[in-house]
Image (cartoon, rainbow, N blue to C red; front, side, top):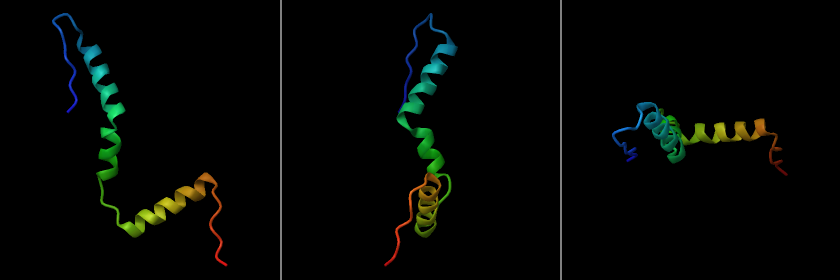
Length: 63
């Protein structure tokens, strides 16, 4: 659980900025986006190979 502790004189803007920074570092949003929709294992393999092709990795050649 992410917490940002405030003192009496702290500003809300600072607290919000600190909270966003902690959320980004922890990877909560990335995990949430990844789990938003279920992806079947066969679709996950297809997405992974498509990403590799976009990055320019050559595809393994069958002999």
